[in-house]
Length: 248
Image 1 (cartoon, rainbow, N blue to C red):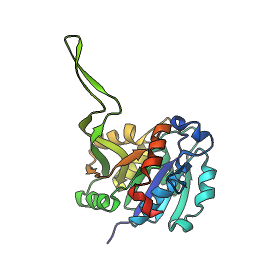
Image 2 (spheres, rainbow, N blue to C red):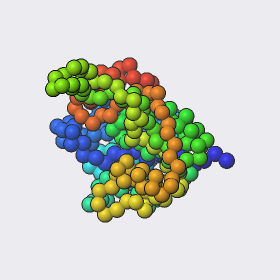
Image 3 (tube, one colour):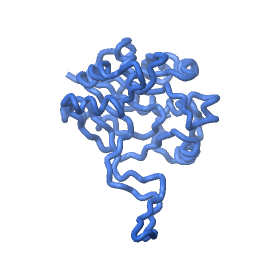
């Protein structure tokens, strides 16, 4: 029997690093690319392309803008539900736990958690297959060969002996995306708390402490963290050739 899969997309952040754009737009609603579609439209299209048609949007700042544009999701060939972040309970983990507890995310065998300000042509079908084969409680989407955004100098005897501009380092870095199974979803609800709690800072370490099985999935795709004005400007240029363009 095929597992039931749902997707949750985090769309509640204020996008402080994207000011002044986010004074006028929710960050996932910023129009990008030649078609000037909201960033979130590409993510929803990607999820739908891989067969997930039940999607929950975890909203907060300017949530009405998202609801007004996407509605029930029928025009985008998905069924959308919404979960409004609780005031005074910030953080990505609190947002997901709130949606699980309220029923906005319906009961499922596996939950794809996706950050709304990340754009990539992620191999979601392969990701789900790896998650199932590994029988993991959680599967993290990772990238290897991360390029540092700054130059690095080597110092010997008080002088610079070499310099490398934005070197690539051999570390497994998280893209923020994950697939959670039943045990992980239950722990998400238990780990969320009355202060800021986040998926990477609080939940993933807690799952490891509890003996949870976490599988890696290495994406081969380029991904954009649209978190700053400069990254937004770069994405606008890159999206002309980006493989997601065919989805919308």
